[in-house]
Each structure stands twice: as C-alpha cells, then as structure tokens.
Amino acid sequence: EAQVTQNPRYLITVTGKKLTVTCSQNMNHEYMSWYRQDPGLGLRQIYYSMNVEVTDKGDVPEGYKVSRKEKRNFPLILESPSPNQTSLYFCASTSTGLLFFFGQGTRLTVV
Amino acid sequence: ILNVEQSPQSLHVQEGDSTNFTCSFPSSNFYALHWYRWETAKSPEALFVMTLNGDEKKKGRISATLNTKEGYSYLYIKGSQPEDSATYLCAFIGPGSARQLTFGSGTQLTVLP
Image 1 (tube, one colour):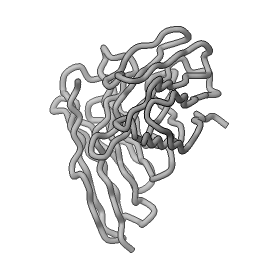
Image 2: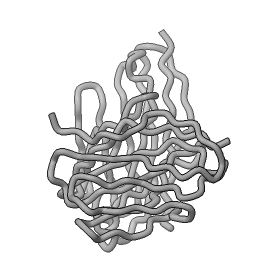
Image 3: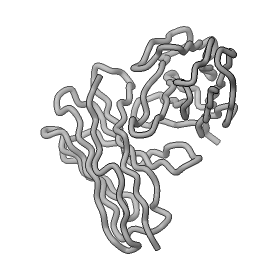
C-alpha cells in the first residue's frame, strides 16, 4: 500500500530537548516536504527536498533542520524546541507534483 | 509569500443541504490547484487536481470548478451528509515553484443530522 508514515503521532517534550520526527514513503518519490498546521493559518511549508541530498527552506524554516540521505526518508529535526513550535506537523511526498500523499500527522507539544 | 484565501472559514449546514466554498489565488503564474479533504486525526486526502482554466471535476456528490483568469475555484457539495464534515483545503502551485503547495487556511464544514 502506497503510504507516507510519520512517527511519532503524538509527542510532548520540554523546551530545549532535541527531537526528531521521522517521515518515510514507499513510493520512490523524489519530492518530500514538511508542513506545520496552526489554527487559522492553514498548512505552512517548513522545508522541502527535491531529491537525495537536495533540501531547501520553505516559508517557516526557523528552528528546524532536515536531512535527505536516502530517497525514502526525510526526518525533521528540532535541535532546541521552543513552545512556539507546538503544532501539528505533516510530511508529504510526490513525484509528479500533481498528486501529493500526506502522512497522518504528528502532534507536538513543547512545554 | 503567495496569498491563497478560502471562504467561509467555517460553515454549518443541515443534512441534505447543498453548499459551496471558495478558494481565491494569484491569477498570474498558475500551474495547478488542489482540493483536499481533511478529517481530524487523519491525513489530508486529495479530492481534485485542477490544471486548466474552465476545468470541472466531479467525485460523487462533490464537484469543483476552476477559473484561472480571475483566480478562483469553487467546491460544491450536493446533498451534504454528516460524513462530509471535515476541513476542506485548497492549495495553489505556481509554475516557478516546482512542487511547492501554498495552502489556504481551509473551510471547516459541519453537517448536522
């Protein structure tokens, strides 16, 4: 089954404690991206990757890092999380740009 | 940053009512417009991918139209059912932005039985 898998689904952490949210897709897609969803703001892009070892900033990259060492994986790294990064995060992938597949989301709370 | 707007922000309708929402986007530099249906605790699910001016797409009771010259798309739901309750998101892709999706803030639909 074609899917995008994020882990964990829920996470509560403390300010400053490094964390990684994993994203994996099994469709051999070149393009992967991360979004955050906040009430009233829609989905905003954090980072994206056009292919292995090719990453670039989206609209709200501050406080985040990503890596793309393999085609299937695109982890989101928060080196020093802060409460303003409390949000719902989605990973997505596509090959054509016309059909995007989304993960089920990771709800992160930073206290 | 591109401006993609959706209205209304939220909507309550009775079961059986038909309804529609609007997505407005930059009319220049258009590549594609997506509509997604997003239920709480699930991933956004693609409803339609629209690329041509005048496109009309239909999936069951849900349909969408596209006007790229004036920069808007309508989503229609005929005979709303409680299971249609969800947030409906539109997302714009411009030609110079590869596969960058710019999302609207969504229309939250609640269908009351």
